[in-house]
Image 1: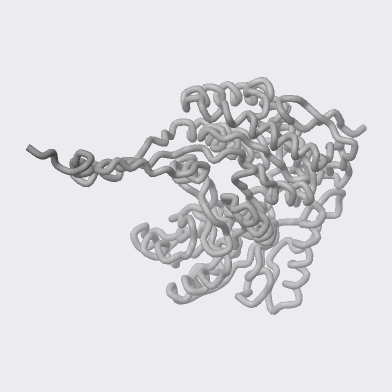
Image 2: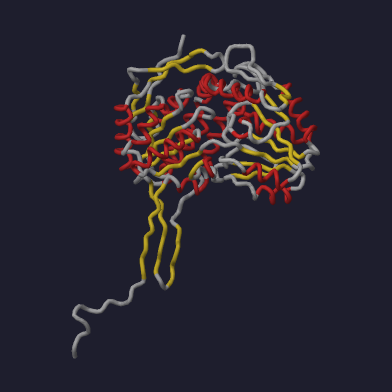
Length: 483
C-alpha cells in the first residue's frame, strides 16, 4: 500500500491538491507513496502568505529568530528516525548515510546561527560617518535537488529566516516527502506564512522563478536548469544564488601513500553513489603511482556492498531516479566504444531498482563524454599525467569550476598547485564537504553567489549604506547679518 496524507504547508496550514504524482523508491523501482501536486493558485497563495508574514517577521530580532530556529531543530531531532526512514525510501541512500545527512544538516543550522551580521563601519573621520547595514530582501524562493534533500533544505530555511526573510520552498519531485514533512513540523514553530513548502514538477519551479512576489531565488541543481532559472528571474531582476553542477578534478602527485589515501579518494568519488555536486568526477594521477592507485581503487570497489538502503552492511545505494540511471549507463556504453579500460563495474546489477556497480575506467582522457561531462553517478575516469603544469591546465580546461583538490605528502607543494585551480573551493588532501562558516559556491558555469558563512548570509540580504557627511557650517538665510 502506498503512503499518502502528505500535504503542502501554505500560510501555516496543511493543504492537499486535486492532482498528485507517484514517488518512486529507487531501491525497488516501484512507487511507494503519493505526493500532492501544487497548482499555480496554491503557489500564489503561498507567496502572498509569505509577503504578509514578512512585514512582521523582518521586525523580529536575530535573537528571537535564532531561538525559533533552534526550537524547530529540536522538534526535527525528536522525529529524526521518521525523517531518516522516509529519506532512505525516497532517496535510496543507506539508512546510516541518511542519518549522517540529518546530523550534518543540524550541525550546519546551529553553526549558521552562531554567525552575526553586524553593521560594518566604512568611514568615521573628517569626511563623515558611513556604515553598511544588512536588511532582509523579502520572500525567498528556494528550489532544492534530489541528492541530499534535507542537507540542502534546512540551510536554505535557516539562512532565509535568520536574516529576516520568509520562504517558499520547493523540493525536487523525485524526493519531495521529507521536505513536506519538515514543512509540517515547521507549522508549530513559526508564525503562519513564514515557512511555506509546496511540491510539484518543472512547471511549479518555472512559476516560482517568474513570480513577481518572490524577491530572491536560491537554487541548487543542474547547470542547464540554473540557466533557465537565471533567465526567468531576470524578468523581475530577482536576486539569485545558483549552486550548480561540477566536474571536479583531483590531482594526485607522485609522492602519495597509495594505501593510505586510496579509501579517501574512493569515497570522495563514490559517496552517495557519486551523486554529489562536489564529488571527484575526474581523477588525474601521476604516472609513477597510476597503476598502483588504480589497483587499490578497484580492490575497494570490489568489496563495497551495493544494495537497498535498509539492507545490512550496504555502503552504496542506487542511482536516485530512472532518468539519471539511464544517463549513467549511456555514458558507460559510450566509454566502451572508446580506447579505454573498464577496470571494474560497468554494468547494472541484476535486481530491481536503479543499481549500478561502482565503475572505474583507466586509460581515458579529455575529449570523451565521461571526462568532459558530469556523470553524477558511480563511475570514475582515472587519467594519467606526467607533468604537473599539464595536469593543472587539463583540470582547468572545463566549463565547470565548483571545486577541486590536490593530494600530496608535501602540503606546501600541494597548496601552491591548488591555488592555481579555477574553482570556488580548493582542498588539500581532502575532497567533498561544506562547512557552515566557509562560503561555498562555484566559478564559471558552476554557479553564482555563495551559501554558508557570513558571505552566504549576506547573499540573503540587501546592503544599505547609511552616510552622514561632515558639512561646513550653514550661513544664516539672507547672508551675514549687517551691523
